[in-house]
Length: 569
Image 1 (cartoon, rainbow, N blue to C red):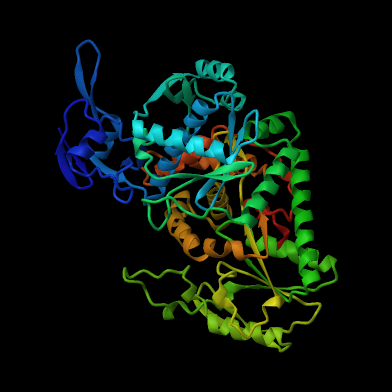
Image 2 (cartoon, helix red, strand yellow; image 1 turned 120 degrees about the vertical axis):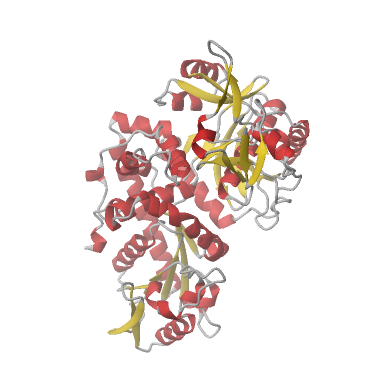
């Protein structure tokens, strides 16, 4: 029987795995730049341990082609680390190796993944004595030994009650509480000797694939460091972003304060009726933080506040709420959008592929913005342009602005933190830079974090569908391009902000699920976006949706996505 792997035909024998076929084709390498880590079969991700054709025991022994292979007509595409899905597969396997090392070096310790920041995943280890640099050195040695042993990572399906009983005996109460919310009667686990764990997605075929990683001590925990984004064959060298780490730590404390650190905690609050109180506390914490930032702006005498953040971070609502707090302090802020400085669409040159990159800094008329901002800060009156998205052109509609001590300027936009927006003649002491993003600290369980990008994607899908009439497929189709733009134009400048605001709301997944889940479950396996949607459905299955929108304030950041935001009336 013949399959096609990355465009290459190959005859397949019964019982051969995808890994066997990759080796036979000469596609397996020792370099993470080129090594296949998993496979895409008709939009669904599979481990390389997957066997396309296997014997099936029935009345007579028969050979059967697997369902996914039949559906794809034998076409298989390999996934490497350069693919975002490959990065996720690599990260899961890297974490399994690390958790196993902790179990072997410190058998009684408990591990909690807190958040991802830069190239590192921050992890805390709860054991009898505080973690030390030497402990981290011992863990790194053990990880290296596990990788060198190259034992296979095989998934096994078990009865849900059996899984709960095992994790109960093993002291992993976080998993027990999560599994009690599982709707299915089975559960898939990975096992090595007496260590059993689960990750929400596919893994690489063996521990030997985790060829690039590092551990960096950062009291009271450590960073598990991923490969460098510019050179996959070496671990990133610098992962510590102090401002971001501080925001994550603060959000972690808020989660503890609100008794909501995991999905099981959130579900308990929803079913007990206490979610409404959580919403009030969470929104009050947001309001207090906006108030603190406004006070800092006034104290510094800043005249221009630049607000940037990735897609669906809540930039527009944040700008309006900050303006409200500045008014409380006696200011009369003026809100502007950097979008109004877009160059006319007809003047933008396409790239080498004939496509127009609308997220490139060159789509902004930077010289004009610089000139206008300089004039405004010097007390002059400036006519601000308006960009008409329907015609794709900039217009002058007689919108004149003059600044004074009591009228600071709030400017929000994708490139607002880019240094090229501020020429040397502008007094930088008059500028305040604010970065906003949904930095989720809610976990599925202690070993499985919910990526911040997943929450932003959910926000965007809900907003695009509810307010813009866009389909799930359209939003997902654009998402990869959006993410690439963020990596290039936003994330490099985030640590340079004067303040970082976490727009994440610990309760929001329970609300977003109510809006999005029925739409996602209607997507068929034939849809090109099916694997992305399946990934989202997989973790949403654990979340109990909540009908509490009457409790959400009309100025909440969540209102920007589910509707009802009074700033836009």
